[in-house]
Image (cartoon, rainbow, N blue to C red; front, side):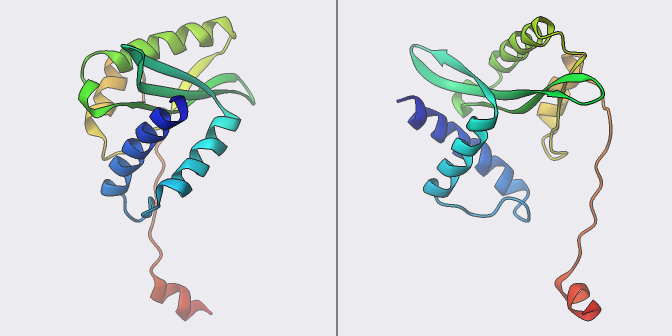
Length: 147
């Protein structure tokens, strides 16, 4: 039950990103997405959100120690029918307690710029913009002409 519920949530989150960034998130079958999820879970800690003994969301994170010790949130996914009910805020508050217990200096995450509502939620919860990642598309024609 646990893996099935997590896979369904992972697929929901992936599809949201694929719809908005088809160039980055290609169409994949569930078996391929299952393997991606298992690889992610092998490198991260996970928190599941339960409602009536059903998984309705999850967050994955890891502790990273470079110049400072940070808790990096890989992703937070809440089942579509349970969004905007405070579950994301609760899991972020729980993650903050973990970061404090692990003596982290910060909590970090990234969010796609198309996801305006989630950006607003993160800002409301005290997250501040740290850096901006820019991209420039390279057309297939440009690549061929350089060869």
